[in-house]
Image (tube, rainbow, N blue to C red; front, side, top):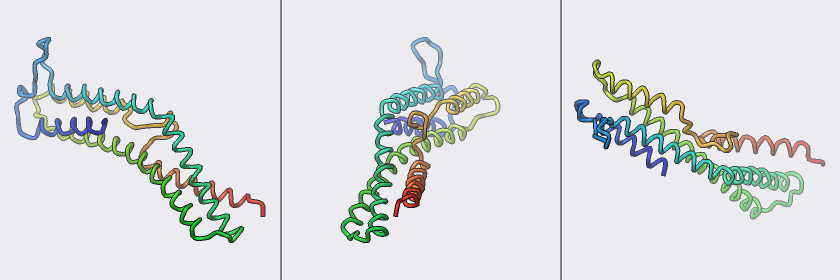
Length: 195
């Protein structure tokens, strides 16, 4: 939902300045007779999208943390079953290897979906910023210039990334960090195993 809102904001900003229009065409009348430019309207929509993102983030932090912990535990334990069965007991059959491997891939897929959603959000905000800075501004058009600057500053100071209680962000680095941590933990478990 938030991604769809951000996509609409980006499309509106692109359409707004796709053709060469006068600045007077970019104003709409409000009920208080003060003209509000399209950039200000898009800025307000961006603020609302960020508020929705914060509400969603607060609502789903605990389930995402529980899912991340369960995925990490499953990746380590299933990989340990494969390593222990292959090296120590030598009783591992093909069915167990396939079963554990499928379960590990399922956990990686869940982490990938979480990381992709957070990365997609950051990517859309970045593209809005690019579109905003590509708006052509004439030398005498200080109002539009100040509105673009204000919108850019607002985007800088609004937290647009999804996090889990501020501990780690849900972005492209999540899947790498989870797999690297699971591999390191597995190596430590194998090294300290009593023979």
